[in-house]
Length: 166
Image (cartoon, rainbow, N blue to C red; front, top):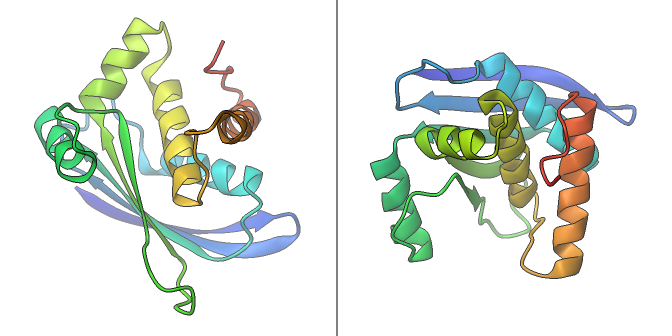
């Protein structure tokens, strides 16, 4: 099922257009709806202070497809919760497109259960985490990880979702 969702977002007084291309390749039972996903993306954009128009795609996959992407692009032969693919264009090319996210629904559900979290809350966290990666944030170095986690916690708190790192 593919859905395209567009909305206007006000961030720090600036108005931006958000377009989310939502592509579900697994049974929908237990998955968030596209309106929730849009709110989560907006929360990530707000804490990152992104004021420009933004477009991204989010594909929800099964374990085999997610494992294929993880092996093909990261050399890791297992399904992971979220993969981010930032747009890779020359700086002179102006586009609202920030990239693509691939989320593995079964892994998200398993992690949520193991961590005693609501699946919806864990999905929100991973969506926000992935969007921040698309915006250039990373967690390979401690200082960067602290900043990224702080932004995630702030975005989730705005949605009344508990700190995922506690």
